[in-house]
Structure formats: structure tokens, C-alpha cells
Length: 547
Image (cartoon, rainbow, N blue to C red; front, side):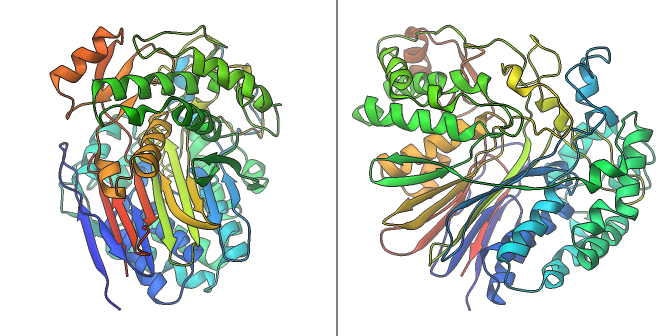
């Protein structure tokens, strides 16, 4: 079978990303080692879940700054003969924590060190999806990840950049030992990194399943490392971790049906709100990429994010979904938007919200409409900066996604409410928004992105460009985007690609405009011709492959 593969390595500037077309299956994601491994697994007869597990395992080796086993995330899964389901493998707060835990510890306690680490969910998620839907044997899915951990891979420019930025938070017995040569010298792009310790952890995971991570030597290593770094995690915290199978949020948009993430992701609520406003306000009536179009999209995004502050983990908190998605409230938002000027509404809640950008995503779709859209995160770059001392597993700082210091904004300036207070066993609110699109009862698109709240605005704009503007997947992903998250009162635009004239139009309408980074979208869609097209964002590392 013919397989073609494209990749871009990111060195701090925009480069050309090349799309790919296939007839059987296409995979889009952040790293060529992972995407190529997933393609080989599909060629061996693996289904989309086997492919998803393979890709995730390889990413845990090659992309530890945002996809290590010490993280967590969400997936939307569609298998033939089964409804679309949500797999929630988000990290949870250790049993020692409550809403007052951080008040006396300082603002950085939820961002760095052992007190920032939530109980990881990624390994449990990979195990759970394979147990429910996998076709090939579990152990066969580890071959590529084990090979790369033991024999090494060539680090990218982005990998080097991430290590440089995180190194000041690494300990000599943790991150420096595993990610710097001899614990002192930085790798350069193209040099080979070998991770013999992680290789041993992966073998335990392969041989024992989830218990190989959540019990025994790996669990002991994680608990010891977290507590050595000032945390209070126990073996029981790991042993008691459980994934959650949930029902997706659903939305109609023109002739399409969408499956979205419910809480504890805020993505579904915000996206569903935006789709309503897009369908009723018709930004497509303006010239594409004009100041008029971007103004309206920015106002739609601002309104859609307004209710995000009221959301939290549904297992601990009653989310006001009926209110936020009611015709009355949506109509109010629609009427509050002016094409002539930017209007700022009163906030619904002014408490703390936290979220970082060290997330990644991959999208998988085959010709039969089987699909996986999976987003995984450590939250910050290399998460908490804590790397387990025996096995070299980077650990998240997901506790910073909770409302830890009411009234104070986080690194993203996001605002959030009491539904997201810390509580033992609770999942923090997230922006991760894996998305599936259905037409005529068949999944025709798998889509998602990393990037904190910019995940949501990126997914919304790619949906709009493809489903309304009828752009192909690659053009929609590469298109310049805006971001507005209600607070701060700022319209963020891509760092490059916006003309001075467009900026002037937006400023004349009352927007405070700032150039900024944006999310990286990874998507696959089934074209009307029956051909699968995959694309990845030129804003960063990426790859797309299939056959």
C-alpha cells in the first residue's frame, strides 16, 4: 500500500505545511514519528483506536513537554455500530486537597513543583479505549514507542526550545538528568535522545496494562518524586484513578451535526454558542478575511466565552447548561452584537480561571467514518517541572486549571467561577475541544487543537471556514485567525498575516487589538469526492499521513 508522509519542523517562524489525501485512513498530528507509527499500525489491520493508542504512546516519548504519560485529556470516539462517546481521562486533584489548599502557599504553588501535580489520566485513557474498542493485541501497540525510547529519536527545534524554557524548573535528579546531556548540556536540533528509563516504564505499562502505571514501581516513583518536590500525593491517589465515559454534547449547524465535549470541558458550550451566533449573524456576507468579517467573528467569540466562567466538573457541580444554551440567552447574545462597533457585556462571574497551552491533539478518520479526536495535555511546558526521578516521566501542573486564588487571573488572563474550586478527586475545567462532524449519519470530520482557550476559537473558525465558506481543510487551517475570550477585553490576531488596513478597521470599531500566537489545528475531513484530506497547522510542528 502506498503511504505518503509530510512533516514540518518548527524553529520559531511560519513554514509551509503540506496537506495529504488518502482513500482509506488519514491521521493528522504534531509529530512525524507518532503519525508514521500510527499509519503503520493501520496498515497492519489496526482500527482507529489501535492507531490512536499507538500515536499517544509515541508522543509520550517524543513530545514529553505536552504529551507525557504524566498528563491527561479527552477523546471523542466513533466506531462502526456504536454511538459517538466521550472518554474523559482528565487529571484529578489528590485526596489531600480542598478549595483552601493554595491560599497560604503562594500563587506559584499550583504552577510549579509537587503541589501543582494532579493525578495523571493519560495511561488510563489509552488503556480504557483499547479495552473497549481495540482490535489488535495491546502489546503490539508498543513496538514503535519502545523502539524510540530505547534507540532514540532526533529532537526537533521545538523540542530543544521547550527544554531550554523549562530547564530552570528541572531538578538535577529529574528533568536535567533525562533531558540534558549528562545533566548539563542542552541538545541541539537533530541530535539523538535516548530514554532508557522511560523504556522500562513503557514495558511495565505494556506488560501489566493500566496497573503497570497506577500500581507498583512506576506509581511509587511518581509519588516519591511529587512528594520530594513538595507535593502530597499518595499511592491511593493513583490506585483510585478512574476514567469517565460520558455522552457528547451535540449541536446542529446548517446541514451538519456536531459532537462536542461536555463539561469538564468548556469547549462544547462555547462552540455550540458560537455556532448559533454564526448561523444567525452570517459573517459570510462580508468579504472573507476582511476587517468587517473579523470584527463579527471576534464579537461572536467574546459572547460565546462569556458563560464559560460558570462551568465545572459535572460530578461535583451542577452546570447551568439549560440557561447558557437557552433560546432566551442565545437571543440576548445575538442582539447584543453590533456590526458597527465592539460592545462589552457585563461579566457573569469574576473569579479565577487557569489554563496553559502545553497541549497537543491528533485527529484520525477512515473511509467508513470511524474516528478519534484526541487532545492530551500537561498544561504548562513540561507541566509542573517535576520529572519522575526513576523513570523520567514528566508530570502535569493541572492543579493550576482550578480556581486556586479567587479573583486573580491566571497566565492566560482567563476568568472563572466557584464551580471550579479545588476538591479531592475533582477534574479541573478545560478548554480542550476534540470535535467530530457528521453529515448524513456518517462522520466526515475529525478536528481539534492545542492552545488553552485558543483551542476553542481555532476550532470554531476552522468549522466556519470549511462548513460555511466551503474552504478545503488545509486552507481553513492555515487561514489567519482572531481570538477573543471575553476577558480581557482584547481582540488577539495572528502575529503575521493581518494587514495594517485590517487592523485599522478593527481599531476603528473599538477593539483593542494585539498580535499574539494562536492555536495549532489538526484536522481530517472526508471531501464530497469521497477522498480523505488531512492537514496540520503551519504555526508549529506537525505531520499528516495515511494511505
